[in-house]
Length: 389
Ligand code: SOE
Image (cartoon, rainbow, N blue to C red; front, side):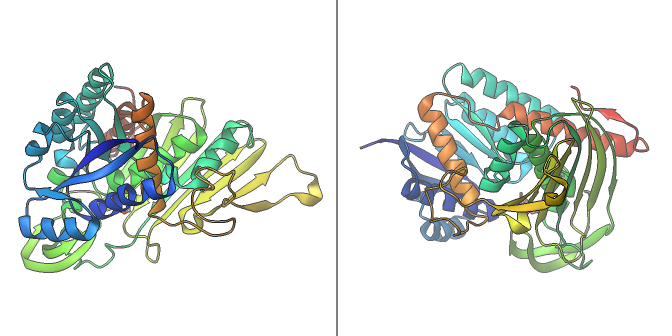
């Protein structure tokens, strides 16, 4: 009987549902060195939390995360709350000796992210680990794209273009959710989905952003107050409130090798529902990962004979592909939810092996510095701004 890793999840919104799926399914498809147990889920509304816990498969419920940190029978704290509570909960959990998985973006500010990274460094010395929940890098095609780049398939990278396009706010009467309030979300499209674009561009290329020049825009300045709802939408309540974050972010970035990247993150790309794309352009070839075609990559081999030049679509469903063999036979595809099972698998394996899972809180801190640099650049006429501390 393998050891158990008992999980306490803090939060029960959209990411609570997705993480629950990951914890529930991972041990049923991967041979893990330890079995994650869905021990307790924390939510402020007791009745709603109890109903969701039963639906998602959590054994117990609680209303205060501090109760979970005091328990000796909890090994992992999984934080799926809005960003304004990440630092408080993660630092307390690490100091209580709990491993931590924290949703992205790591924090709502560089200062919070720095303190979280420092707490993670201190905890690591005691064999306690922390990871940030950038799950798109765990889509097999994204990991395969990284493997190809690391093997030199595109040669020297000259350019990277990364977009994360959604359109759930084009209706000016879409209600004001926590994602549109700076005190809860930290930023808007920039941190919510721009963070994914930054992580994926850096993960697939292996490069790091060192400076940026950007612009942020809020197209709709006030909206109806949110009534009931979960995730991205809900019903309008009473009155109206100010939108205090960006709807749109665009920036140019320079990487540590001198390569240049162009980034766009928006909630106003009409018709694009969840379109995350990263294209790497090198002197030997190019690779495109497109979440709207998430089981494949497009690969262009610039060294091929002239008559054979062209992007080819590689279907990433073989047993030898990343995370392959655990799910279905070749050609049977995976979905958005599988990244959360891969995340649970990778975290359990890292904890059992006593090794640092990635992305670490240091990785999350670096991304937070990129986001902060874009905000400062936008406030200073899109001036080039360093991502250094
Ligand atoms: C809303 O933009 C959202 O749920 C993000 O918060 C998630 O990180 C992204 O994966 C899907 O869209």
